[in-house]
Structure formats: structure tokens, C-alpha cells
Image 1 (cartoon, rainbow, N blue to C red):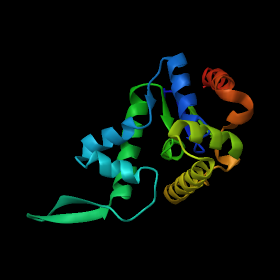
Image 2 (cartoon, rainbow, N blue to C red; image 1 turned 135 degrees about the vertical axis):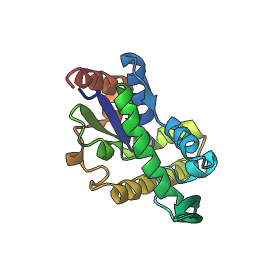
Image 3 (tube, rainbow, N blue to C red; image 1 turned 30 degrees about the horizontal axis):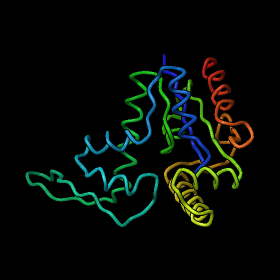
Length: 200
């Protein structure tokens, strides 16, 4: 039988990461977010900082070079680092879900695991005022700076997600549930997800 897995997609500043971590603590199951980049770095021997720079972004400025055997000779092959990172994270995500139930944040994991019958895909959102307040406080930014960062990050996530999956980021039909963190709060969102997790 497949393991239960909760995948959380989220708007920047909506609290998706905190909701995932709190749910992980309650359920006593692993939580994967930034650790996925570290795992990809170790698996590929690519530089962690370079992978972090392209994480959840569809850009073509950085390249990953590796040797490939062609006949009896080795040749260097170059592919965009973000392409390499997506493929590596997809492999890692599938391996992690085979090992145990878990919670995964972003990275198109809902699409990668779309055939898992015990998948709960979640989208966390909030109105802009809530997100601006959170980002101002967390990053010590002005309201104007926070607003610009939110718009930039959400655009990057949307482009990334739409490019690597057959889904549309934020489209409610692509998720099992969408939760408004601004109206519900962190704890209520976790309560709802904990209840749904028990039904998987």
C-alpha cells in the first residue's frame, strides 16, 4: 500500500511552510522543504548555493555540466541547472514517499505524485494585506518592498509550476483543498489538514 503524503503549494507569505511544519509535528511524520535542495546537491554533486538560486524558478542562466559516456569516450554535456534540479527533486520525492508518510512543500510534488492514491494536495492562500504583514515582519521590509517580493516570488512559482507540470498554479480544480490562511489562521488550517490526513 502507498504511503500517505500531504503536498502543500502556497502563495508567498501565506504561511504554507509553517502550516506544513506544524502538521508534521502533530502527525510525527517527516517534513521536506529546503532539505530537498540539500539532498539534490548531494545526489548530483552540484553546488548547493547554485541549486538554491534556481529552486522553484524557471530560468536558463545557470548550467549544470557533467560527463557522459559516448562509445568509448567521455564528453561533457550541459543542461540548464533548473532542469537538472527538477528531475533530481522528482526522483528524491518519489523515493521519500516510498520510505514513509511525509509532508512536502511545493516543487510540483502534487504533479509528480499525481498517481499516488493516498495523496492530499493542498493550496494555501491569503489576501494581500495578510501576506504583506507577514513578509514585512519576517524579512524586516517596508510594505512596498514586501509587496514587490510577494509579486515576484509568486510569479516565479507560477511560471515554474506551469512549465514543469500539466497543471496551472493556484487553479483550485488542481488541488484537493484550498485554505485561506488569512481567514482560518495557522492552527485551524492544521486542524483541517490533520482531519483529512486521517481519511487517506
